[in-house]
Length: 92
Image (cartoon, rainbow, N blue to C red; front, side):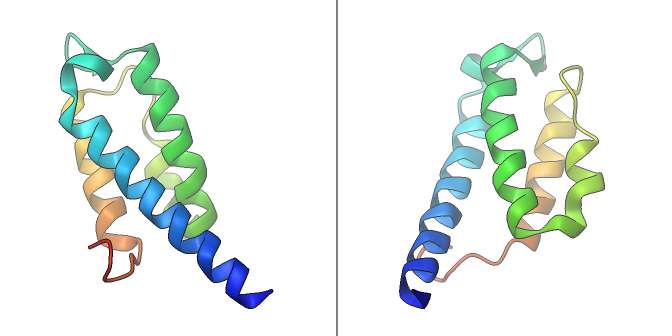
């Protein structure tokens, strides 16, 4: 059972990292006029859910982002998230 949990955690770490990179790198798809659009908000909601499971102490910082947050604010929060989430060396 422990091995399964470790495997799932590694998958969710990779998935979280992939979503963060996708949201930041595909600006035109997820931001309109410098703010999160509906598709960007969907991706950020998934990121938020995964991040809160792994680092609940970052809840206040993550929840500070809303649909009216600018690109710079979103990137700042995602950067702090990446710095604080412990990814395996395989994904770093």
